Image (cartoon, rainbow, N blue to C red; front, side, top):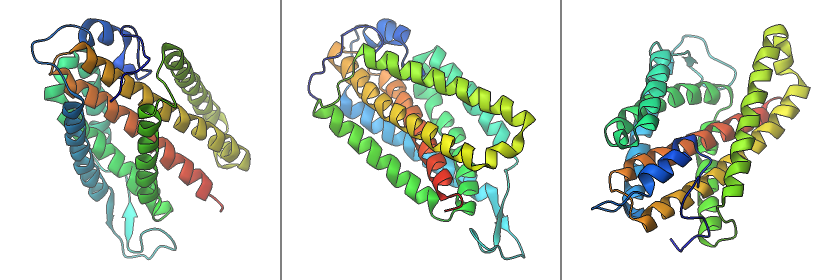
Length: 267
């Protein structure tokens, strides 16, 4: 990667996993063996491979045969939440916190986290695909396209990672979190509103915002990786940066999946 305009210290990414504390105390610390872009890339592919493996496991656990033919989706299968879904969810949350607290644990806990996260994603994806056949493939392809577009924008410096961008993305993520909380509270009193045309329109707009924020977060993650390489960060941190990049990709995939589901409703 070419040199970036990002400052050498301070928060370089809006990704919670790549906090300012991590950048200043870990990423910029001198090391005997330095990380490389290729090393981060390889470790990201390894984690994504385990994520996909966990996804296939979760998908298989979520679907089962049924005697009745359905009008849409799977012809002879039914989709249910697998027994280990909540266990995998809490395990992924617990492992993610452990890695965030101690970044060097990513080399040991990154793979089990990817498996647990993948299991949950696989079950969720199976449920979406049962309602709209082919939506998962479209979401995966769209996620790949957004990733490539974000990488090209970063490499060509059309979009430059800066602290101002990181603050804007972080503020946007906070706003989305508050909005999701508001919708959750509102749904307790009026569940039917979630299936109205008004909510569908609002949901499309909000999800588009989430996709843009995730794409910008990818650009910021690339900047963080490059800053770590330039500063000679420890080789072990390649796993943690790969972990952070995977977290952003999962967020992007879920956002695109939700958008496609909303667009396909009553279409």
